[in-house]
Length: 268
Ligand code: 48H
Image 1 (spheres, rainbow, N blue to C red):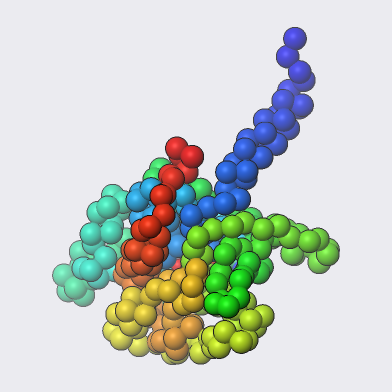
Image 2 (cartoon, helix red, strand yellow):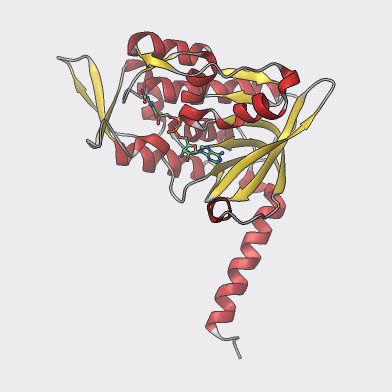
């Protein structure tokens, strides 16, 4: 006779969660933040066979995409982002009078996430990265310290747990939260988060991509966190640089991990 449904529901969830976590506790790459840059990075990393884990504080993904342009349900990109949109079969419309491509924010969010998951990345929501695992001489990041976001909101004192990885990507957006942990807790490393500048879209779109990459051994940055770290202008709801920065950080990580044998999560 089958066990009662309530028991089977709970056991199924515990079993599958535990199986996932035992696999994920040692990942190739941890991406902190499931916004446009983080999800784009996850897509390319997972597709290349990297065991990729995305940790997102909220219970939803997409980061700043969902807000569109001042809550209007559209964002724009320029022609440089079109190959990425094509990679993920994301629809767009070209407005020749503005020389810009317009797309629906909901489609961008959904397809970036769905493609990342289909490529083998694991996206876990409701989890906050609150610290890093580090080694010294030379300083190196070897993983993250995590806590349920709900616990952090509760004000309870609950000790966190650890996840190891060969690379950590700060894709936390405007606050560059992961890099600020290095700045605050490991001042001897000499990292200074200079803060984002006011709006100058033309300049920032290329600068953010140019400055995307490794920060210290084991730690990389993409998206708006690059603007915060390097004192670059903001650009408003044009998302080319977020997508291009996500792709670039994936390339940088892959280059550095080239020596490792990578295991795709789906086959691990
Ligand atoms: C777990 C965390 C943590 C943490 C934060 O803000 P995002 O969308 O980030 P980007 O850089 O991919 O995209 C930025 C874009 O959305 C934007 O805001 C633009 C282009 N602005 C221009 C302008 O002028 O304003 O996503 C970051 C995600 C969010 O979902 C956070 O919840 C999450 O990271 N996050 N997750 N642990 N410590 N900190």
